[in-house]
Amino acid sequence: MTTNKIIVALDVADEESAIALIDKLESVTFWKVGLELFTSSGPSILKILKSRQKRIFLDLKFHDIPNTVAGACRAAAGYGVDLLTIHATSGRDALKAAQQAVQEGATQAGVEPPKLIAVTLLTSISARQLAFDLKIPLELPEYALQMALMAQEVGLDGAVCSPQEVAQLRQICGDDFVLVCPGVRPTWAESGDQKRSLTPAQAIQSGADYLVIGRPITAAAAPELAWKRIVQELTTVL
Image (cartoon, rainbow, N blue to C red; front, side, top):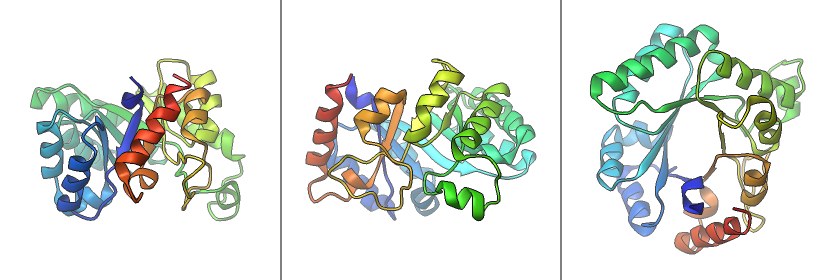
């Protein structure tokens, strides 16, 4: 189903606002809970989503030493979420520790382990910023690919990348590697702080498994109409 490809970002300040959006967008089946909402509400928002049989992308982008990310992933896996993120730049050892901890945490909680996916490079970072601010000597597509390949080599389930890198990653990493694309913007929505964007249809055609879409839906004057418009646009390519 088309709707299964779209993860709507619950990028709101508090649990009350999140519940209001969930109520308004009843046909959304997959929600993203990020840093702001999780810091505000804690795991209770995850329980609310689970009680409504929603799928959950817990997007906390862990980035720390191996022991710390392992502990965080072990705890997060116990919530029964579907997707969980860690920064690839945490390094190979941290990625390995996180992947093992996800399995342990899920087993201890008696739930299915989430798919652990590596963030290659934030979609707010441009090629110029990668070179001049972060001092990375690789071209941006090559850097994103190397981060994804490292994650795949240590056993992670997939990667987060911008729509502009997804075609190359799909070709090289294969069909079984889950690719999640934030920074997706319909032609009728503002780009905001996203630097490397495509439309939903373009991202799916390029090889994305899931699209993370927030403000074009949640900040729209009529969120339910924006949601339906994006779903309709995707039905033409799926």
